[in-house]
Length: 102
Image (cartoon, rainbow, N blue to C red):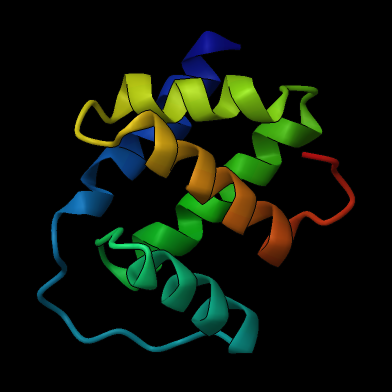
């Protein structure tokens, strides 16, 4: 289980690095999700931010609490504050996994 989590978040650790290539937006949900993160000051490529949002939901599907997911984000990405990690979890819930309670 820990290896799955590390795999999911290792890919996400690079989300703070700006992407050089242009990106196509998948849909309006993705656009809104990325926009709300950017308005909060969270940077990264659209693709990596979207992947992170889905990874949050995947962990919630596995039974992780919102707090556990936020803690995992900060452990795997030390440059992310606790507050930003919780914001990412909340934005992911609103965009991609509304079936889970925060």
